[in-house]
Image (cartoon, rainbow, N blue to C red):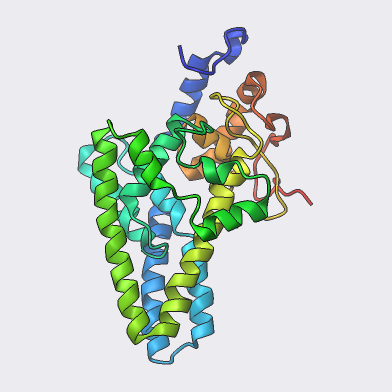
Length: 299
């Protein structure tokens, strides 16, 4: 029995049928994510010599760097779930490459994000075990922004204690700490020799990117939800076009079936809409019958 699944659901909406449909959307290679992940990091790296050589002004470099940082997490997120390798050992290098490289702009270690994200999926909305609880449950957008900026949402020490018996988790966190210290050392060196470039091309864009990522990946999808497979994530509408917020209105599909790649989620949510309504997924009734370019806007 899967935790959180009701037993009085009509057979036409059985969990087995839901899994079969979901599996049909879980095979496509997400080449767009590879392109976006590697591409944004390469663009970000290219901004530095362009600014240093005065080919573009620093303020343009700042805008480009900020856009890159806002595009950085999603490709790594796909890698965290192994959605590039799809269980094939010979392709795991793609997960690792994209997972690490795309996060340069956010200055975050891939291993830390990977293992804490897996725990988030396993214990979504659990106040003691969900590493994202501090950013998914604030009462307002302002509160979640402040928590991200002051660092109070990143209590990794607490989760090292919570999962002290999970050797894989602890080892990954320790490896990630080394990468984190490396990033900070590089940033410190840049601050000494190129203070304005370090501020406007890396530190400030990374902060903006982390706030953006937290708001759309953590806060909006889980705002006002509770515990349970079909209750801990919601469908929602937003004034922002979905291609700007990475279609996170559909994040509920990802939580139910993480193997569905990001660019397959719109078709998957169309097919699974009756199942989501039958299971009482928050906001499921608002899901459009067809997710085209932008039917998810709410003014």
